[in-house]
Image 1: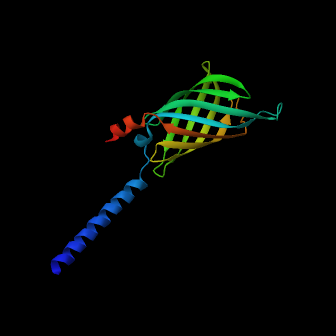
Image 2: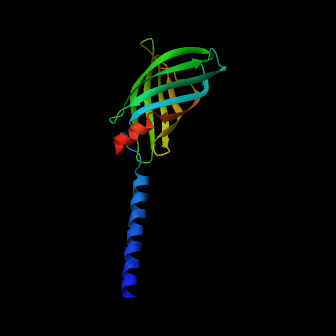
Length: 167
């Protein structure tokens, strides 16, 4: 009887330890190194151009960015503003918090010239394999801020390769 009680207690302690370790791992799932990699994304929304043209204009983007473990971002995208497309280059920085929220701040360049600066609020989901974003700031090179309602969704590319790298 004493032996069964000891075994039961040992089993209960082991089970609780494993559960606590799994819970602790989930809480700190996001980090710079965890979200680093190649990402593909798309987004849609509406821009409200300066007072000369107050009509809302549809906007869409699709592209990819590379994020390194130090928070540096580079990439390319195709954007469409009211049906006029451009091929853009991106450079900037990203931050990630342990609760899987973060920010992305990028300069967007068209033919080598700064076209706009964008700041996105992000949340990483699905084990930091996907990202959702909403634009919080869009500023033209002349300093004019454009009101905008833009959201985006992204997914880590080459997921299988990245998971092997982490093991």
